[in-house]
Length: 309
Image 1 (tube, rainbow, N blue to C red):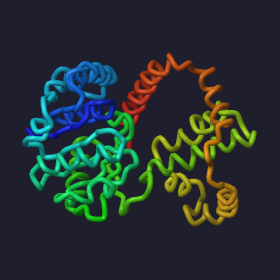
Image 2: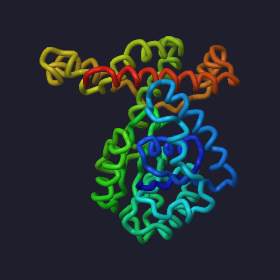
Image 3: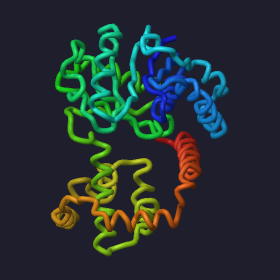
Image 4: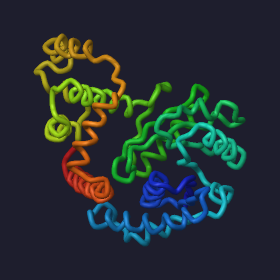
């Protein structure tokens, strides 16, 4: 049984452990903070039980969980692993130190992948002897429900390493996408940032209330975007496809983007959105609502699996 090392046992690390274990791989889970990896096993078991209840895993939760073993040390965690998935703090200095240690401990053929949401691999791998086997494999939270993984190499990352990582992600049921070069925030976050900035601008400029803007995405864009992307969407929205769509709506869309200046998340607008959200959902209910979101995602995934492609 191939082994994967998951470094960091927080929310994303636990999710990665589930992704690899449910695909039949052995997982070694380590966290710098004492006792965190051991405590993570209870949370993993509960999430696996939810997946089983939704029909998204066929094996019993305890069978999948048995493939995950907390490691006492980082060296124990990575020993014999074919892939390392790092989930450390989103701070540059700790990531540089951790990757230096991983590069020292792991054989040169083992890919070292970071789950970072926005720090480019070139910032924390440039001085490593094995920098060519380092890359970003950025998941979407939670990765055991949302399968997309962005693969982003540094300028020196070996193409074969990206290819091997892509093959592994496909093997474990994820959907990898490969960036040809580094860009701030990677791709998914840049797409999200464009929509989020416009949503805040609409509130700031008095165009629409936050709840109605959420409805525009939830009941409008989001329904199509749950099974097709923006290019396929516009390809189907004009008889002649993309070129026809741009001919019909390009001037309108272009005019809109000319108005979309950078948004600085001004305090009054953030405060208004915050107030409306807290009126709709008190802070002490966020955890329960997040669990509800995950169950809805499970139901959506189960539905999609039963539909033709």
